[in-house]
Image (cartoon, rainbow over all chains, first blue to last red; front, top):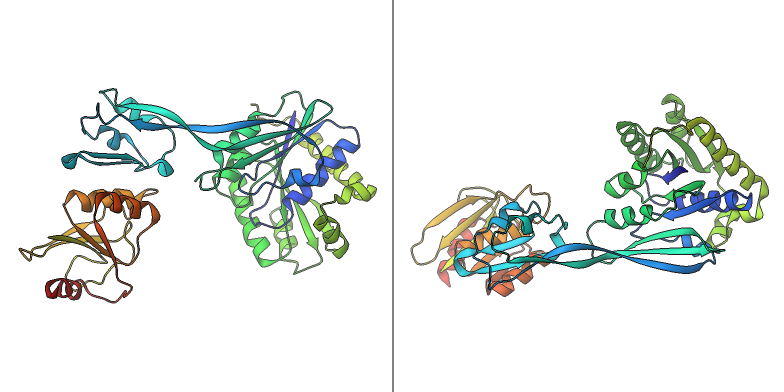
Length: 292
Length: 106
């Protein structure tokens, strides 16, 4: 299996547009592919397809429950907690778990010598599986509202990829923080989608530097080419980053997208260029060091 | 009665810190003895959970009131359950000594 993450520092550059179009083009040309929506805060890739929901997986973490009848208020659990999620006032015998801060590491239950801490599952989100002809083709991560980190849900979604699948397309969350890292870290290659604006350039630069720090090969797609200025193009040339494609700015493309339709479905030339782009990436990076 | 005030520094001339959990310093003022204690806030650069950890600091000193510019959501429910009154002062230039004078006039 070869995994390609579609990412960008900036939001709204067209990650999902590119990911959905690549996926559709691969499937249509008879290649075996799965699309994983790792943007757990706002997943929307599945909205472009009419596939059947065939399974859901609840993502949980274990949070501590304190039995106050056994607690001696020694505060050892509080000392072990790196996230300030155990609130304790020993003189007045008050102890509380602040679930919102808990990372589910379990250190508090290891710390307790009095058997006062048990654990219960707390919901973090859901992974949904959409299938076609008995085969999972879209995996969607969706975190619960109010949950602090998208990482566990993204991890759970990526775990659902059948290792027998030919190509996995990971639609990454925006930004360059933990959810982005979690997504791109499992990829063999990262496609960075950007736009020719100062914001696009600033965030592209951050993404490129982040990916370099973890030795991840990447290439750039400039979306809405023709808008803005040439600064992104100059940066990509100067940094010797492969420019994979330029998608011209077009009102028509925006209209098709806004109707929930996939451009590659009606534009065989575009579909063809996406398939050959992916084939070239696999040819050049197929022996990637990344192994699950 | 003891009152906690969030402060931007460790003198009575320092201004009120508008943040609770990540304030520079806590002032513990005792209205009966007029004593003032300054506690540097160890949570001001905490990655997470500065609010609850700071509640623990002021609550363990036995304060009945807390004065700051703003209280976060996790902090509010904790103070409510501890029956500690939160007082919001939206005047960033207010000096600690001025707040203490207000408390003494009550």
